[in-house]
Image (cartoon, rainbow, N blue to C red; front, side):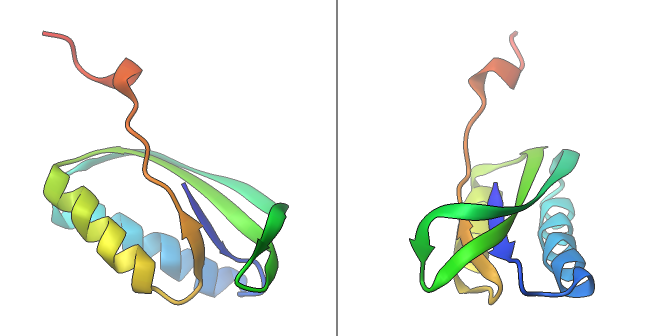
Amino acid sequence: MMITDSVLGEKEQENLVSKVKDMISKYDAELYSIDKLGEKKLAYSINGYDTGTYYVLFFSGSNELIEELKRVLKITEGIIRFRIFRREDLEKVE
């Protein structure tokens, strides 16, 4: 899940999502879906932002991908906050 600056235009929002999609494909991971939840008021102000645009991305990938995503999203301008969750209920059972 990531929250982007809602002041950014539609094109800039798409560029941020595209950047994440490119990273996922670079690491040969599988992207299942991208859900844009839209602009919402934040529960509390984050670095002066009161609203943000929420995106939920479902993907599977390696630990290397996760670490690289964390590194890049921390320094990417326009990303207010992000969280990566592990969905054990979606893991393959052998």
